[in-house]
Length: 457
Ligand SMILES: [Zn+2]
Image 1: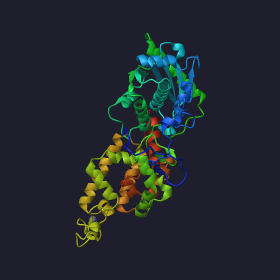
Image 2: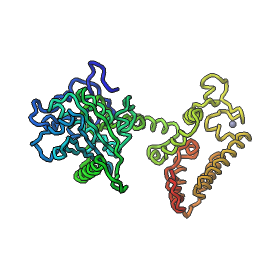
Image 3: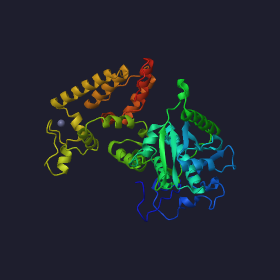
Image 4: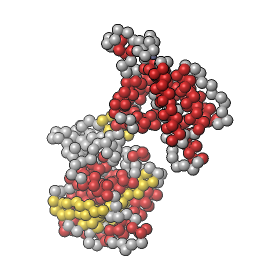
């Protein structure tokens, strides 16, 4: 939502290292309204900028003017009033650390206002795109301060940047979805635009990035973009060992924290993992004897991806089958729909989901053989390491017959180890998609030896 309902206040985010691992900041009256975050009765436009304790200060952590103090933003202010003000921002990103540079021009380049900032966020959330958005926030924060200080209520600013996606997201009619990447930063830009006096219009202009490498004649926007790009890069180097951690943004209305750190967007998977993993581990330990130490050796990412590629019905069935809730004899008896729990194919006393796969009846054997043929063919088509493929098929056949499959000491030690690990995880678990991560490494090496760029995953 763009605006909070009446009577609802923005959320507080208090870092917590213990206790709740995921916390949704509730609304409260504690938070200082953003408008009071600058000094009252400013004598320079810089006094009108957010003070150091404000959650907006990050965006303007370095502000400069060539003739600092002499003009006090007047030249830019005049240009805003006349609708001719031009601003440029650009981000720099490397090693999970982002910075941005920006400048705001009036009619005289000597009086331009410039700034730099470090993009707040968790390392895994940083990106060139986020750094660019951070630059937009800095630009808008300075524009707001100049408008406040010079009492400007009408005018226009054109902001140029080389990221078309950022422009589209900021200017879109509808706000982004909470699950969209950098939701917090996009919303911060949108809120900052709304916070300006209603008579101030902000338009965004796309500049083609890195035109200097293309040997073209450069216009003013392109030249400024190159200059600001370098400015952002210099700032990145200056702070290369000091990236900015995640924090609540100035206009942020609610926020989620994970283990005390604010999330840039609502990441359902990450939260689910944090809240549910312990419960899931306990469940599968009880059900399929997946011990804690084996958990990390199961390639759950691959299994999840494979399941997602299946039709919806198959996904539903797969969950029922794995949890042993599929309508087999045992469940039908429990549900009192059948008077017995026998296997209707071979007559075994109790039909369980495991029995469905290992039933000795001829029909079941044919189905199994066909499935294994299909698997063999698929492994061939994927250029699976031949020894690995052979051992997988051998172990699966032995599992069905209830036999111990002999794993000879293979000259390939990593293969022997991977098979041993899968023996620990279990081959029924293999059928359910709990596959050793060591297989990935073997496959990867196999592809590499053939100069193939595919990954084992
Ligand atoms: Zn049977």
